[in-house]
Image (cartoon, rainbow, N blue to C red):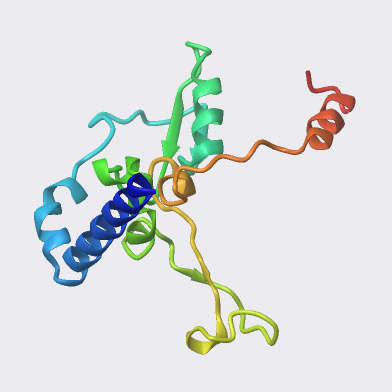
Length: 158
């Protein structure tokens, strides 16, 4: 029981500390250089065999698979910025969802949901950066439905 209370206190304390740092502007000033890290190479080709839009979980896998053929050139484009060390800490997902790592999408006004939120619209957290939503979803992973994989196999994908 004591361990649970101590762990809970630590999580809550770190959460309040990070939230306070964000609200006071300290978060951005301390990590300003990390927010503005450059990424990728400085040299670009005149043309590419493949251009992959989005460096989320899916886009990164597609680009990686295409790049396995050494005769193909692959460019991957991402609207977001590079990750910082905080994107690897699941506890900071809520904090990161109010930064530039989130596209800031909102749902349409609904009569049956999000009634207590501003304008009755839900926040739809979608990641903007290398890794996509996986950088701001507490690093959760959900395996796809077995039926989907079976259906893809029936279509000839093995």
